[in-house]
Length: 339
Image (cartoon, rainbow, N blue to C red; front, side):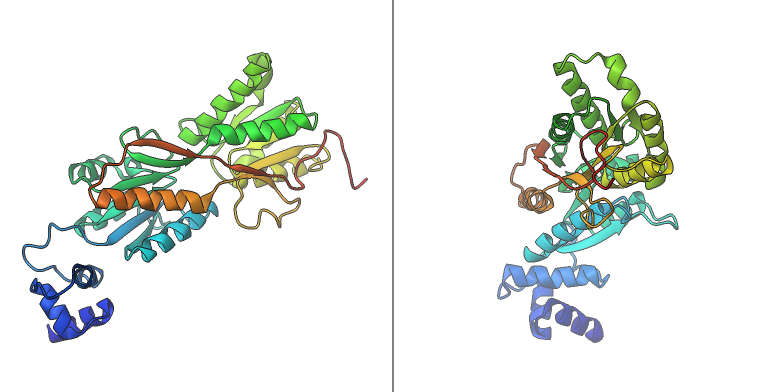
């Protein structure tokens, strides 16, 4: 136990005497210091003193579906940085190829009496019915960032998908494009559904009949290969531009166009969504809608900490406007600047 006490004290940055007093509930120890000592127990896998197990600790789960999509690490980095500044300890949880799923992580987090969870690009529904019910039953503070499904009873921080599509379409039609495709994620993916609804509303407002734009809508898994394959169908249907629901799909669309011998942006213009790292360095640099990652991370962490303090936070979606970053992947129809 002596060795364990030394480890706890070192992790918490206090003396052994202070750590011992904190573990015995001494009123001489400041609350913040006591929380650091208790968090050290959690991180080191040691049990809390009897009678203190029900108190929430400072560990915060940060759950992402994967780390292949560049926007997920960007959000994870921004959120973990802000959690650290508030004295909270982030625990990154991501699905792995060897079968560790969101459900596995949720079970481990619940065992640690987690202080709260931020879901990025997913939601507690993805964790499984049993784990989701446990989170609700224990009233674990939750914030969902760009959730993939409907979560009317949860606090949600989301990019304004509809406005992003409006910006991209306004940009493309302003350059003369009339046959514009939409390439988004799978049917049932909520952000994709919002983008499709905005796409339909844009053409309806311009009295373009649905039989003209519906053949130019494609759904695909979020991967470059899926994007390339679906973009090929849209191009064969006559699209001169494609609005994509992610940068990954946009890069796939460019790949699909080149496989058909088409030039980007000479023959086909492409826009993305996210403004992931290095999108300004690809060939051609990608025109894309930038998510305000820093502001969304601020809002997510603020909403989480308010719940942890038992302050009321209204459930529902808080949308954040994106910014269209115009680069070299869009141009006027039939314009070949290199020829």
